[in-house]
Length: 412
Ligand code: SF4
Image (cartoon, rainbow, N blue to C red; front, side, top):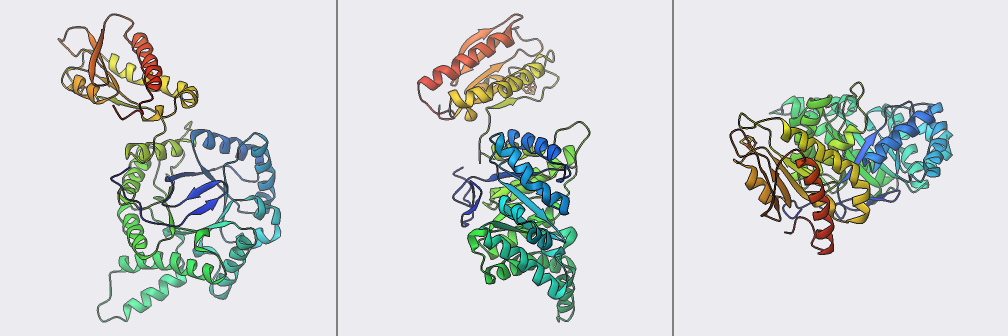
């Protein structure tokens, strides 16, 4: 989007996916299955990929998990899924990667948490082991600092130093500084060990929106590393989606962030892919990327005569979901199509004219007719029992004709 100028970052290649300011913001997700359970991890990974996840992270927490990684990747490849897989390592990553070279080879990126690779000299040695294996296999690394596991030695060192100052800073500021330092010092060390800037991604996740935004904003000013954004432990459902959307939007609007994840606490009977859907909704609502036609629909109010407009909006969204696999192939650019489904004459005609195609349903006390607007002009008026079916026929016809005019959607 022209209004958002991306912060300049180098290109980091992860499998076939490119991260960095030259490329679109990439969507990531993470499985919550036991990685040792190849079948379950395969199934959930496919679910995430099908939903649109462009990188999928698996925890590699023990030997059984490390052993299972190559087999699960083989299963994915056999079904044609080439989405890069990221190994998430904590505490024992240095041992697992050294003991299971095949796992090190087939993973596309390693996530290292500098807060839990060990203490003192061991910290440096273990970190170095992972970085050297990454270099050997030509893999990217993400140095993922997390507020919940911030390097306590570093934090103590910085707090002590701060306490000796004539005018000590607020403890919160020191914590922000420690989050950044942990990421930057680790990156510097990785560089000293031979890792190229084009192989390093940084993240500094926190669970409170204002903290997270502050630290990422400061970090973005201090370096030009590729950044992965996420509000960690954001919560579930409305809370998680709402807070993640707000946090990511603030940073993305400033051009900060090359990849994103929305971390949602799983809800019963809700697919893990919801976190991917949330990422897509954030990027599309900001005009950064387009995934499917958008439907503008009014919230309804006392002027709506029935809940028909709610069902129509829902049916149109379901129609889009069903048709997208076909539309994507037949009508490139269809994802930018704008549809309006409105409930009365107040904003109905206006919103419908702004959309590529829109319908304005009759509100209370209005004539029972539904004008359809195409490319900003009133084209036809629908009435009776078959409004939904007739509108869908008009929509399909519009997409066909628009394509034959080769006019990109959103350019009317
Ligand atoms: S368009 Fe009409 S029905 Fe919909 S919210 Fe506005 S006033 Fe209410």
